[in-house]
Amino acid sequence: MLKRLHMPSGERLNQKLKQRDFKLNALLELTRAINDNAAIEDLLALYERFLRDELFIEKLVLFTRTGTWKCLLKYGVQQDEVHDIADEQFFTRQREIGLTVELNQESFDLTVPISQNNEIIAYLLAGDKGEQEIRMSPVIKHMKFIQTITSILVVAIENRKMQADRVRQELMKRELELAAEMQAILLPHQLPNNHLFDVSAIYRAHQQVGGDYYDFMDLNENQVMFCMADVSGKGVSAAFLMANFQAYLRSIFTYRHGDLVEIVRELNSCVMRTALGEKYITLFLGVFTKSSRMLNYINCGHNPPVMVDRNGYTQQLKWGTIGLGMFEELPKVVEGEVKLDPASAVICFTDGLVETENAQDEEFGVERLEKLLLHYFEESMSGLNDIIIQSLDDFRSETPYRDDLAILSCRFY
Image 1: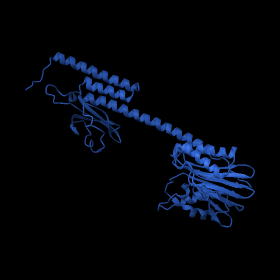
Image 2: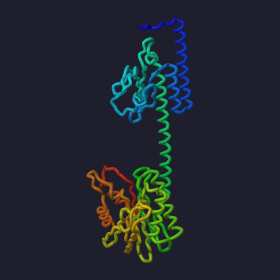
Image 3: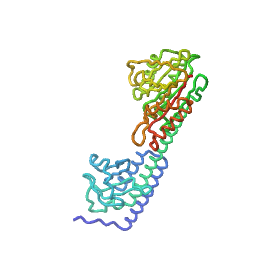
């Protein structure tokens, strides 16, 4: 039988002093590296060197919480035997420092939970590869130091991640603010209200930045263009796509003219180049000619606007084609045409209006909208929009909006 070796008291004291100095220096070196903002990989390498090369901890696994228990560092174990742990119950009972735990085919002498703000954020498993018959296991011998240095390391890593998250959130917030500012610039600030036209609009973004767009502009002394568009998806990417689309659409109508079918095909090519097939835009595009009172339009997969006149007649403007950006070449494009009697109105909207639901999962719907338009036909367009929104809010009650909502109401005297 092997006997435990005895060391002279002076030598033991000298060794204890050296270990104490090493531990103090190790803590200082790790803290300095943290303060110097060293990479996480460098911090882990430093930590591993202290425990494996200086304290002779033969095997170690460090888990941190990122949804599952992720293996952040491991050495001295078979690579395929230790991996991330998805089992939420594995560490449930291990709230205090514990001894001996089995993980797959590996046995560990020490389990150390690491806490921050009374929440366990990491677990350390450490042990020896074989039986230690002539000396105390370094895992047990240095347990307090292992707990201390591991806690410093893990808390620093968690703080680093939290700081990175805060930076990302701040950048995202700023991006959203810029996109919202850009979107506000795109929408027309002044809409006509005179003896020729009464135009009013309402826009409510479901999030800080939406993907709806509307416009109304003079083309020449005899024609005006108006449109309503909705990009698939939301957020910053949708806003930037719509900004690009708005600039291209306005440039077409400002610097050159062509028939609506040709213009729509050009717009489709623009969306394909910009979105690369990942997003598409639905669009209603209309051109009203004052002298003939003819409205020519193309509906590209958008909710059909409703035309209403003083005789109680309504018509949904649905002729056109599919959404822009769905295919490189649009299939058949049909141009719609309708003659507008004096004082007729065209109400354009996005699906956030008619698809809003109440607590019984009923949609607001086009039929309910048409009844409002007929009943309040004599209202100004601004007053009509307010009535529509109030009716929608009464209908949905406590049910939240689920999409962007835009309304462009145009009366043609």
